[in-house]
Each structure stands twice: as structure tokens, then as C-alpha cells.
Image (cartoon, rainbow, N blue to C red; front, side, top):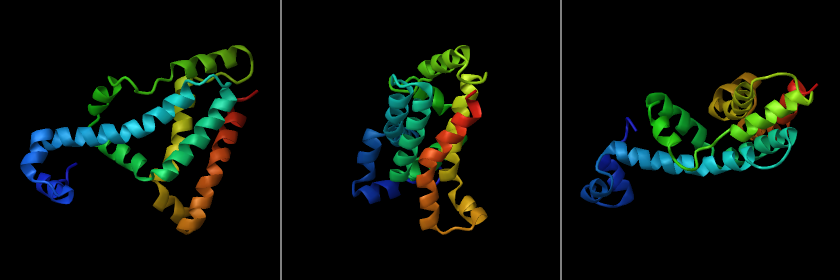
Length: 178
């Protein structure tokens, strides 16, 4: 948002600046509309997996496979979301009030049930969720650095990302199961 100029945006859209200001009175409101649109693409993916009726291990597998597939199709989203939220963390409060904002409530219940049943070792559901998110997101936001560190080109890195659909889930499941 910081580098965006309303006139340049209007020019790219081939509309006049007055029309842009009519609909989005300010650059901040335009940004919020764009951000909400981008977030609304990924929020249903999160909700779908977090709130389905599959078992915990299946949910972890589905989440990882779906998330990686989704981000491969929309590679700009993780960087955009993280970059803009780091500049404007208060915006999450606005996002959280949206009706489709992802909830981990059902996931938390499943984690706690799995602990009580002796299926997984004790772990806070929030910690497990953060681990899952981080292992899935970082390869996309840190792509150039990771490609350099593991010494692969873009095509081979994409193959590595494809493998993460199962690798991350198996890693997490093996880390928590008894």
C-alpha cells in the first residue's frame, strides 16, 4: 500500500481518478477492499479443512495438501498478507469481524479429544496450529532464500513444494502421535 498512488492505480484500471475516489474514498479503503478480497480467497480454504468432520490426522493431511495446492496456484498471497499485516496489525481486528474469518474451535476440540484418548502427546492446540501454519507458509514466503540454501533452481524448488503436501503432514503427525 505504501508505494501505491491512486492516480497510477486509476491509470492501470483505465478509469479516471475521481471515479476511483468515488468508490474508495481513500487509498486506505481501496487497500482494505483489495486485502479483504485476497483474504477471502484463502479464508474458505482454511475454514473448509478446520471445520470438516475428518479425524485429526486426516485433517492435518488435508490441510497441508489443500494449503500447498492453493498457494501454488496463488503464490503472491502469503507474502502480500504477511507483509501488509506486519505494517498494519490492527487491520486483523477488522478482518476478524468478518463472518467467514477462520476459526480453530473445532480443531481445538479434536486436539484435546485426541490427547484424552491417548492418540497424541499433550500439546496445546494453538501451538499445533501455529506449527502447521508455519511449516506450510514459510516455504512460500522464504522461497528465494530457501532455494539458495538448498541450492536448487525454481523448477526443482517447485518439485520440493509439491512433496511438502505430504511431507509436512507426516512430519507433524509423527511428532505428535504416541
